[in-house]
Image (cartoon, rainbow, N blue to C red):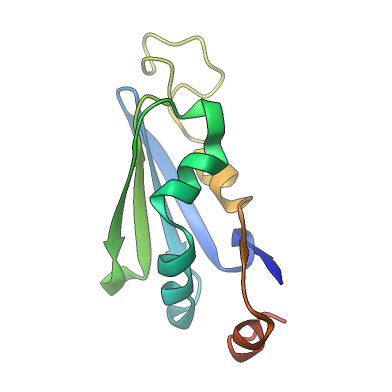
Amino acid sequence: MKVILTQLAHARSGDKGDTANVGLIALREEWYPLLAREVTAARVKGHFGAICKGEVERFELPNLGALNFLLHESLGGGGTLSLMTDAQGKTFSTALLRMEIDVADEEASRLGLS
């Protein structure tokens, strides 16, 4: 089944220069392994498509039940250089929460998602 990340996590985002920083935090501790397995740097890069022109780096923070992503070259040069509507990356967290992941029906049932 498809599960949208808003069902599993909350997120925060911001910027440093031309790099958006997005934190994805599991709403329940038992959902963190699913996020760690499914929300890879490659999937995040694909989700943002042409918005992210550089690499996506992922950092795991299992003690917080969180993942942190750096999306390089995604803010049109940064807050003081860009004419983008969101040159500080504040809405990137909401955009990431729109990602869908595939979860096997049995796992979804075991985790209380179905």
